[in-house]
Image 1 (cartoon, rainbow, N blue to C red):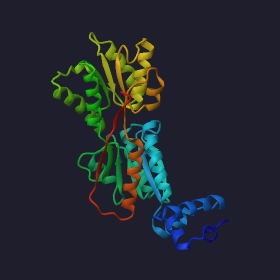
Image 2 (cartoon, helix red, strand yellow; image 1 turned 90 degrees about the horizontal axis):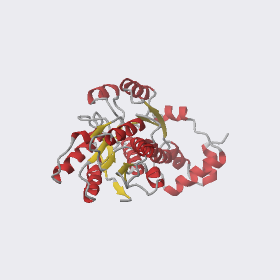
Image 3 (tube, rainbow, N blue to C red; image 1 turned 45 degrees about the vertical axis):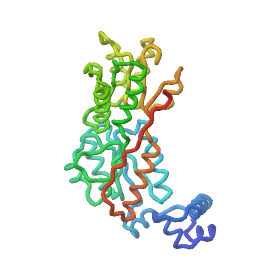
Length: 324
């Protein structure tokens, strides 16, 4: 079995540099690459239990998601995990399947297995409950914020993302635009609805409440609510969908009804880059900075684990409207 001394001989680096890397410290990029190449070549295995006893760290970051089936969260976690692994940390990913009780249970599990930090996409938990469960462990929220809870958060600018999408449709002379939006107990969904209402107000166009359809951020909701919009006495001439999975459902419903998008009903999807590009003609979509969100979450986690004492930061990253 290879040892750290074998890594030192292979790389020509000092034991101190290699130990620093293996314990999650920052080393020069060229040194990191040499160490990682040697680890692969020599099939070196890190003794995480022994390292945890020595450093008082598990070298793990707990990641708690509403679901592990969403490609959106997959992209974010992949970008984050890659950066964490470069610094010697490993991710433990679990989900709570949109269940508020399981949301709390999974948080307790991560705390009990002594992860060094938690990256969390919340849904129904409040600040008081989260504070009672998680203590003395850095928490970074991703995609969603929790009112009155002081911690770092990385989110996309949901309000302005929908505002820009609606502006694009207004410029094409649409005035009846359907909105398929997520549950209003989620901060991103609330912000997207605010953006929809605000752009109507700014353009002096009355909001028809029946054009606002609230779903569950899943495929079934997108399918059902697109059909509900099309079944109205006066259907919208355009539809804006505000979530990856609901975009799939809405496009599926349009296909089954024989509605050509965007010729018969104009359409803007959300995050579903592959689907919106593969249909003919390609559909416009709001693209959130998924990779950047993951990298920034990892950066903040590492900053906190290195002893950073800066006040909690809220990073609000810009989305873009593509292929309009």
